Length: 309
Ligand SMILES: NC(=O)c1ccc[n+]([C@@H]2O[C@H](COP(=O)([O-])OP(=O)(O)OC[C@H]3O[C@@H](n4cnc5c(N)ncnc54)[C@H](OP(=O)(O)O)[C@@H]3O)[C@@H](O)[C@H]2O)c1
Image (tube, rainbow, N blue to C red):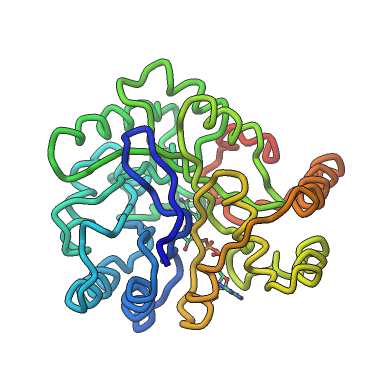
């Protein structure tokens, strides 16, 4: 069955569900990518920082050799924060590892700069052990480099990740090209409605990450989720992933387990009553100050996220 998709501001279609590859270990990720693509997935999310793009590339090759067509697959990857002054160089590294001539979408992973000349290529630290972050660096500089990639044939589109409302409001008036997407952590315990609303208003497609609550999928046991799952006779995972498609958002779920990879493609149409339960749950957490952000690297900034203020 053809997967549903959303139209980006570039005119390209992005599938509604994609495979994540963060923390997919060596020996697992090649099989996961190949299996996913041969079982209906058409969207793969990668990142230089994940340290597994060589093996993701082997998985892509295996799927292409088995008959999946490159042009039918949407592949995105990201420039890491220690390369935010050397974005073109980072893209070339990813393309080489992935075995690709182009990616469908290239993203800024985090709008911060880790010392490019620090004591580690990806995760430089200061003598006190904290991250070696360059203070006062302007994230718009990274976007200018992203825009310059658009004539190279190496990227079909460009976008951002982890942009809060204030960061977007700073970036947008200075853009020649509006980001095609904003990839953010998103689930009923962190709805980030203010960002979703701004993106919708500006034609920036939202892509949700960590929909199951990231490592160990803790959100699958949250009460309103299990209640809806039971009522509908579907899995908690299906409720959590379908929530995004109902919101007009693409969702990325990571798994290296074949049965789960397959199950995560199952999307149902949640009705108004289901969405009300989920939205009430989000509103209640917001009121109590109990929103849950699972992914927040120690960059010594709040990135403008209100739950971190
Ligand atoms: N842009 C960014 O800064 C950023 C940050 C975080 C994530 N991401 C992207 O978003 C993707 C998804 O987020 P995530 O990896 O943080 O977390 P996630 O997809 O919410 O959760 C992954 C966890 O859930 C388990 N799982 C997957 N499907 C399941 C199912 N049907 N039933 C039970 N457990 C299941 C996985 O286990 P197994 O693998 O063992 O099956 C893994 O432990 C990432 O892989 C990455 O590509 C982007």
